[in-house]
Amino acid sequence: MSFEHPNRNNESIHEVEREIMRRPPEHNTTNLDLDRMNLMLDVLGHPEQSFRVIHVTGTNGKGSTARMAEAICRAYGMRTGLYTSPHLERINERIAIDGQSLSDDDFVDTWDQVKDLVDLVDMRMEALGKPRMSFFEVLTAMAIWKFADAPVDVAVVEVGMGGAWDATNVLDADAAIIGPVDMDHMQWLGDTVEQIATEKAGIIKPGCTAVIGPQPHEQAVMPILEEAAARNHATLRRDGYEMEVVSRAPAVGGQLVTLRTPLGEYAEIPVAKFGEHQAHNALAALAAAEAVIPVSGQLDADIVSEALGGVKVPGRIEQVRTSPTIIIDGGHNVNAAEALRAAIEENYDFTQLVGVVAMMGDKQVEEYLGVLEPLLSHVVVTENSWRERVMPAKDLEAIAVQVFGRDRVTCEPNLPDAIQTAVNMVDAEDELGVGYGHGVLICGSFVTAGDARTMLKENRPERSVAAEALAARVNPADVAPESPNGADAATGPAVDADVDFETDANPEFADSNFGTFDVAKAQAELEQDARAIVDKVAGAAKDES
Image (cartoon, rainbow, N blue to C red; front, side, top):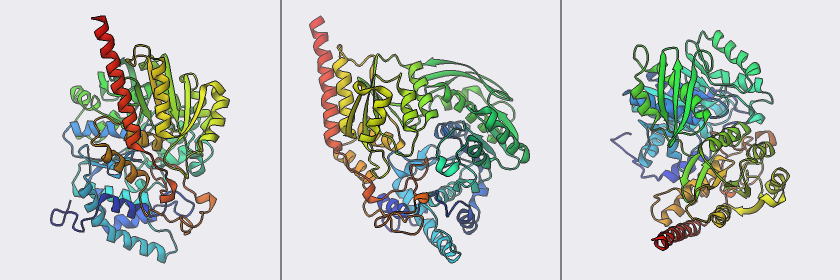
């Protein structure tokens, strides 16, 4: 922060967020290049050269892997920067220093330091007939500038989408992590896993350590990644070859894993996340950390244990309530659904699990639901707050009926009501009233996860604050981003090829896109139910005595 003039214009975080959100979306047919970001780094004086970089891509698991790698580096005493997307509740979440998201004033001050330079880049691009900087490019520039200003020793940076043309790819990675490559965002990355893998391989830079996670399409994808590594003379670390998950066992709050890298074996390391995929994410994070932490030989297993045992990943198989158990997951593709199902089957013993599902219209909806069908006893289809992008509940219902059958599907377009409906179904079957074996799974989109998390997160302050926070996130006033072809998003549609559906990094927000939730009402109802359950249990205990 510029302590001489912290937030000198007395701007609110919401004002700055709205200003940034007015910008064009990241991925469209007119800005698939790094010209704006390269020019921005030029005018900033190349701050990216002042720190090491762990760069993370992949169809799923980027956020978890990035957080694990950051935690290991921080546990070793390195000052860390972390850049992730999307944010679930507040835009500040995307940029963190030493594990702490930027404060509102710090975020505002970082924007204040770079916005004049953003204008310079915009002017130059407009003179060349090219687009202005996008929403995600501006945030990426802010993160890079803040990391250099901190200063950090290592920045762990999650790709927004793809790799080669992503705004983050102006960074030269010391360690490039490529997680599982699968089908997602096909309108931008390609219709085959080979095309998608080629895009993601773009983050492998000369002389780096290329850490390759397990590949569901290994025969098609691995040759592409290996060729990119060879071309760049990168050190290759492949899951199942140079490194491996030796063993894993479920444990309270996560699992115990034994990991092997070329530097040695790390036995019974606690990982505070469920699922086999998280063990492999931990392995990738460990291999990348080994490449950037300035020590000789194997890392200290106790320090690694301390780091991985404390990593929390919001919105990824996150349990936010008990009695009944409520789990939130933001995954939105088939690979994410498979990981979610496997983790729940391994770590929970549900006799009844009711799904609350809201998805975007451009996703593989039927395939996603098909993976979860054996897991869910019933599904309540609904809509999240992103009105222009979410699949209408009635359309989702028609698909769900084909997958689950008419008797196992309920349609409730309002998300708080959908959650309440699911909780009521669970309570009706819970004879003891203690929640064992009964749960609710809220899933299908990061927007769905963010909406639900805002409503359900424990220890939230006064309800009016919760209502205000959600309203600010899903109803930002005066937000009308430019469409990629220059049309006003509030008055005319963009060219179909340029419409930016939900991506991992950069939703195209507009004021008219979002609905509203009566958060206070929803929270009051949930809290009333919770009190009723407590009273019921207390009454039963009294009767027994």
